[in-house]
Structures are given as structure tokens and as C-alpha cells.
Image (cartoon, rainbow, N blue to C red; front, top):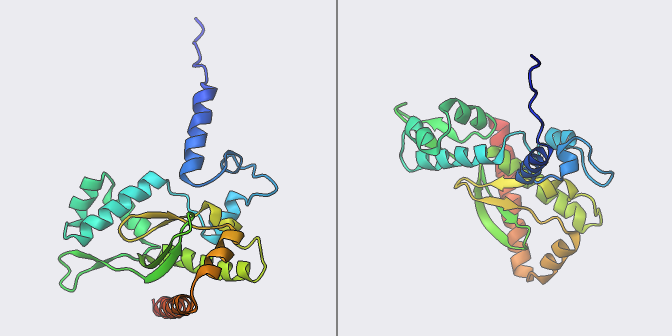
Length: 215
């Protein structure tokens, strides 16, 4: 008797690809490994650190657990409440540098790498957003690219169209990548606001470089 084979549900597979692509800020073509000419390849985005391979819902649980630890929960309790394993938390923290043992070694403490301004996709400039090492690095790259964009390099912000930034509280941000909107926002800033922003960011950037050098 011939065994029946399960028929593939192509519609369900397509919807799943769409969902995964949306979670990572990618087009379906990019998620399938066939980026359009105008799009960056996923491999290039991963190599630059602009996007990662971890699913968004896993990262959401990770930062939920981190927030729990910051409120005094044990790592195991925070992991259980966030429905994520301690092993996964430690793996994701390896390049984020959030968790450190307390002085007496009895518990975990949380630390941020820097406070950076973030310019969101809808044009809001948020000051002093607490970030871990990985996200601070991406935001630092973004502001370097933003400066290039303001000087005429229109493509410098393109890779960040796919970035999702998580702050230390688990809040998520997409970055502004429209050069016209970027220039418009900076043109609307007062001289005092612009000077304050540049002074603040330069100070944070120096501190971040020093911290990385010493780690």
C-alpha cells in the first residue's frame, strides 16, 4: 500500500515568510535570499551588524527578562517569567554586555553601555536612550551614516531601513532613513538644540569608544 504524502500548503508557507520578513524589517525577496538590485543582501546586513539572526519575539523575551533582573528578580525567575531559557539569555548577552555578577556574587546586575539619541522613523528625536553594547554600536553607526547623508551621500542610511533598536527597557525603535526628512528635521532645530545634540552625542561616542577599548 502506497504511503500518502502530505500536501504542502504553499499559501501558509508564503504567509510565514511574510511574517518572518516583517519581524526582521526585510522584504520577502530579501528573506528568501533574492534581494532586489536596490536592496542590500541579508548576508551584508548581518556582516555589518545592522541586523541579527535572532527572531524578534526571542529578543522581546530576552529584554523582558533583563528588565526583570533590573527590578531585582533572580536570573532564573526572570527567565521563567519571560518564557526564555537562561542559556539563551546568556548567549544573547554575550555581545550585549548587560549582565554582570554583583560584588558579592549572589545576584546579577544590569549595565548599559551608553545613552544615545535616537531619531525614529516617524521623525522623533529621543535624547539619552539607554542602550546595551550591541545596540549602541548600531546607533553609533547610524549617526555616522546620518552625518554622511547630510553631506550628500544619499545611500548611506539605506542599510538601517531594516534595523530594530532595543533599549534597556525593551522598547523598540525603527530609525529614520529618509534623507529629505533627516535634513528637514535638522534644519528645524535651533542653533542651541543642534549644538547641544552634537555635544551630547560626541561625548557619548567618546565614552563608548573608551569603554570598548578597556573591555
